Length: 117
Image (cartoon, rainbow, N blue to C red; front, side, top):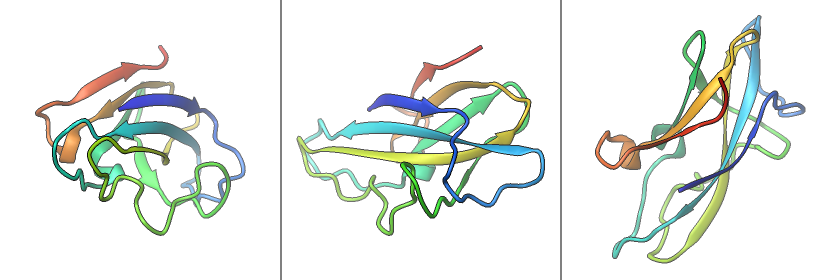
């Protein structure tokens, strides 16, 4: 898994946000290096940490990080590369600090990328 770009703030997504929150998009690539099909959920595998609050995934009906009908993290064949984006909402005054990828939503094999500070 590779973080391609963090879009902060993410504009034009149409995400319904709570008052005082902003949208942040996390664009990633996932390559299945294993011998079997990887089938998971992007919102369960990817998380965002921030200086305040608890970033939560939100639905984005349009734009670069539009939430797809079928999760891009589903049914990835061995050797296949997929790119997708997950949109998170976090407090407007918080700083996005890191992206974490937890394969199949588990701690085993998790990796973290620092993005700010």
